[in-house]
Image 1 (cartoon, rainbow, N blue to C red):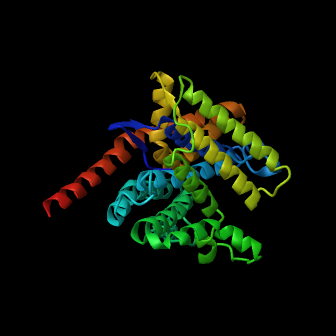
Image 2 (cartoon, rainbow, N blue to C red):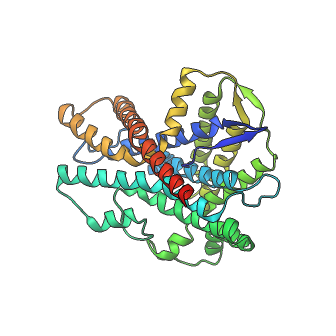
Image 3 (cartoon, rainbow, N blue to C red):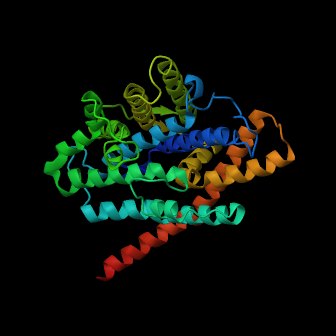
Length: 369
């Protein structure tokens, strides 16, 4: 989800463009879903823009959760691809460097986003739920969080920790990783009821399956079981087509399966994994403006994901006070575009330099020892 992937082929380092495109698309799906959902708040427009077409209501596809599913599958793939050797699947990174990279990549900008959210919310609404902010700052596994999208990073860090423990620190514990991936299926099979918002429901969450599918995709890629040399000038268009295909499949699945059931989750995750492997197999022959924009959105996807709620609330507040009944499509496009541009700005001027400076300082401290 968060790491920028690079592939080493005969000494030449290249970005895997497809996975960056997918990260950008996943972030856009989340933004669009939240624009639609927040527009239904009484203080804005009182009804969702597209009345369930972008949400889970009426058995329609929830773009936001499908974007999160894609993020989780990408995370499973990236951790596998960047941490394990192609031939042996043994770790090619030590425990401390692995954890340091994860902490530096995620926590500093996450803390910035939480503090920004807290300040803006206090100045505009005079609300300051300090317990929720503290839980978010430390990724406490249970309890309410602010901003709410931090919940996904809880699961990300749990996955990083278990991945590191079983595949890097203590390789003999690898079977435990597989059991963790499959734990939601076992729990469902034995009809064990875990209390919602409990430590057990967090540790053995249904989302473990998605990280497992990403891990499988990573192993398939490392082992060369999937073609890698499909050349095209239409990579971004193919990514869009594949994502639309995924959403259509999930839409029809939801007509016969419970929206949050394991069948839906597994099918959605499996399609995400296939889309991921396919886009990773594509190589682009020529740069274009569309390619550069798509790549920039992918690079900025973390910033977009963490900051978009503030801008959705602000724009909807101003817009609803000026024009109570605007065209739904216009609202969706304009607000989403503002969130994406704002996220890109934060990526360029905050997230990227913040991460680079901390990484540089840690490197200097290591070399000075």
